[in-house]
Amino acid sequence: MTRIAIVDDSVTARLFIRRCLEIIGFSEAAFIEAENGKDALTKIRDEHLDLLITDLNMPLMDGETLLKWLKTSPRYCEIPVLVITSTHNAAKEEELLHIGALAVLAKPISPATLLPILQPLIEKQETDHERVEH
Amino acid sequence: MNESNTDRQKEMFSAVSTTIENLTFKEVLPASATHPSLSRSYADLLSASQLVIEPIQGEFNLTMSRNLLTQLVISVYGPLLAVPASDENLHDLLAELLNTIAGRFLSKILPQEKGFRLDIPQSSEEVSFTSAGPQMVVWQYSIDDEVFSISAAGAGLLRLCRS
Image 1 (cartoon, rainbow over the protein chains, first blue to last red):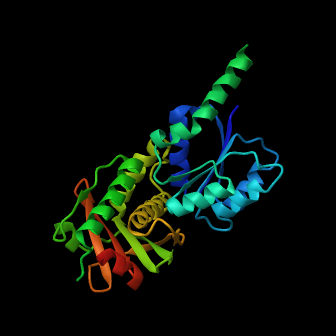
Image 2: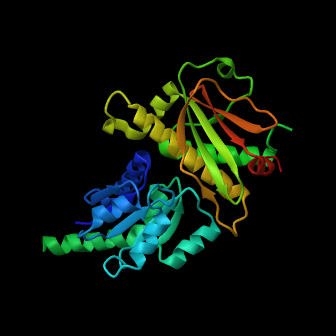
Image 3: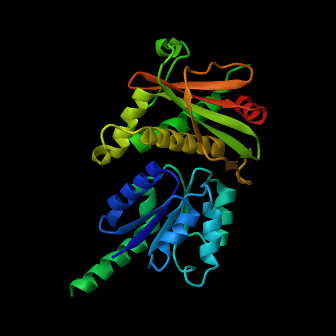
């Protein structure tokens, strides 16, 4: 089962992101939701994750700190991290990609903007599903 | 001059309409400054404010009636919403709308070579719509003929909005 963490201090934003993910092919995924970076690190401990999606501007631990923490952790550095933020511009995107983000998207996202970025994960999910069936 | 220039008006309308239409599937239209509902003193307006921290200082404020926000929450949550919509739902949606609108607007009017930072939105209760003046630029829009407003204040932000 595909496991995806969604990290945003807004309930609305988390709901919307999850809905977009379900539309593009992750309706059977297991979702872990967190309100900030610190909450996310607690909830993903000992969990296998296929993807982590994070906002930047959050209380307690922001998304950039979370990204840096994950990318320098031997246990979590392989997790793809997608940043979805209201403070998106070319400079910020370059900075976050340099830290190790998979991609950086501006809010509000849509299924159409998510799909090309997550297509490899959708295909992996389908391959894993076929392998289990056989 | 109290008004933002034409380009800024277009950029703000683009930020507002893209945000609200994507999130709530409701159509946004510009509202006249003389729209009748703006002169009424709403007993039940909600407001969110958000500071711009870098590279300029300023503040955005988004004000909507409780009735309009409730309709938008219903659009966003659909069958997942516990009836009636809670204050927490309303404030959360208002904050997220403001956060997204402010970010989209600033990404258009600020240079792309440097990042910008916003504070976390704060909620408040408001009793009337703010009027434009020397210290504030106000944009008004409507959804289903119900008006809401977004304003900008602070010297640095106002300079950008009027340039």
